[in-house]
Length: 254
Length: 344
Image (cartoon, rainbow over all chains, first blue to last red; front, side):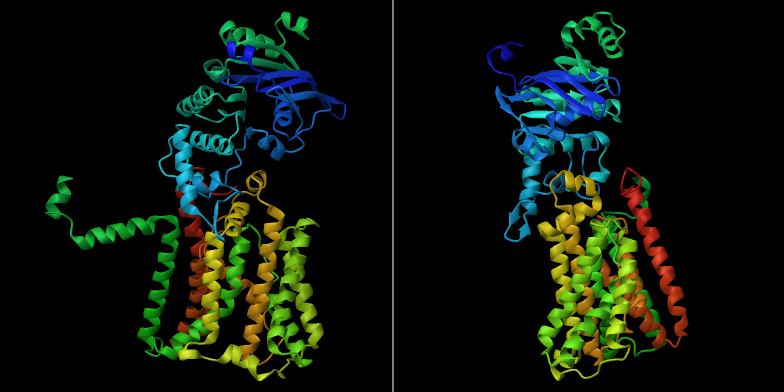
C-alpha cells in the first residue's frame, strides 16, 4: 500500500522474543500493521500467535525487541497501558456479561454517572450512536447479551473495544464458532474499520475469512514469523504450505 | 385471522388489549416472576381469609409485616451477595453477635445509638472476615461462611454464657416497639432499607459492578471492575445488615438472646431470596422479589395459624414453594437465553 511508504506503520514490532521456561514462544518476530489495513496472523497451534497477541495487547512483556506506535517507541506493562496507547483487544472469550444488556456491557466498569447514579439514558444513547457509527445493527441496546447470537456478541465486543477511541484493533479468532452469515457480518464490520483508517490485526484459523478480508497475511510457525505475504499475490495453497512448513522456500526464510 | 374474526367480531375489546399488554409484560423475565409471587400471596391470603376473617384485619396484617422484617432486612443484603455470585451462611450467627455486642455495651452503660452502631460494625467486621477467607485464603464462600456461622455463633454464646440480657435502656425498646400511625416502626425501617437497597443495586455504579461481577467475574475483571473490592463490600454489607436485624429483633422483644438467629435465620433468608427470583449463580436478582419472598414466608406461617392448620405443615409448604420457584425460574431463563442457560 502506498500509504505505508509515506507514514510510519501504525504498529511495528521488531525482533520480539519471549520464552516461557525452556520454551521459546516467540523468536525475533517482526510485525507491521498499517492504518486502513487488516493484517491476518495465521499459524498452527503453538506457532506463537497467542503470545504475539498478548505482547501487542500488553498482557505479556517481551524478553527482547521493540514496539513502535506511529514510529514512536513504546512499551506496555499492562492491558490498560496498551488500551491507553490506542490498542483495543477483543479476546476470544469476548468478556461480556450475558445477563446484562448491550448498553451496560458497552460501559462495563466505566459507567457514566449523573451524581451518585449511573446515567442509564446517556449509556443507551451513546451505545446506540456508537453502534450506528460502526454500522453494526442491533435491534435494541436493552437486549441482554445472553439473547444475542454469537456474531452479534462478537460485534458488541469489537464495538466496546473501539468505544474508547482505539485506532489499532486486535481480534483473536473473531469467527471461531460463527455461522456463515454471522461471519459475513463480522467481515463487513472489519471492512468498515479498514475504511475508517483503523489498523486491524486479526489472529485466525479461518482462511476463507482471512482471504476475503485481509490485506496481508503473516504466517507464524514454531514461534517465528516465517513469511508475510500480500493476499492478492498468494494462494491458499501457498499459505497452507507455509503454515505446515511443507513449502521448501520456508526454510530459506527461517 | 378469519377464524378469530368470526368468534370475536369487530376490534378487540379495550379490556382484552390491556390484558394482552399486561400478559406480554408478565412474560418478560423480571416482571413474570414477581407476578407469580403476588398471585401466590393473594391465593394464600384468600384461603386464609375464607377460613378466618381475622386474617385481613389491620393488626394481623401488621403482624405479618413485622414478622417479615427480619428476613427482609438481611435478605436485602443477601440479594447483593447472591447477585455477586456469593453466598453468606453466617448471617444467622451475625444476627446473634450484633445483638450481643449492642446488648453488652448497653449493659456497660452505653447509650443505645453508639451501641447499635458498634453492633452493626461488628457484623460488618464478620463480613470482612468472610471476604478475607474467600479472597485471601481462597476458601469457597459456602465453606468460609459456614465456618464463620459456627465460630461467631459460638462467640455470641460464650460472650453471654448463654443467658439472655434483659437490662436494656428504654429508648432501645422504643426503637423496636413504637408504632407511629399504627404501623410498626420496624416495618418503616425495612421499607427504607428496601428502597435504598433497590436503588443501590439498580441505579448506582456499585450495583452495576455487583451485577457484572456475579454475571461474569472474568469479564468484569477484564473490563476494569475492581472485583475483589466490590465482593468485599458486599460481604461487609451482608454482615452489617444481619447485625442490624439482630439488634432490631432484640429491641422488639426487649431481650438480647444469643440463642436467637442461627441456622433458622440463615436458611429462611436464603430461601426468601431464592423464592424472590434471585439466582444462586449470580448476576440476576431483585429487591422487590426478596420482599415478596420474605412476605410469603411470613404470610404462610400466619395463614396456617389463623386457619388452624397444624403449623407443622409450614415447612412442607415452604420447601415445596422454594423448589417450585427456583425450578420455574430456571426454566424461564433457559427459554429466554439462546445459550440454554444463563450461567455455566
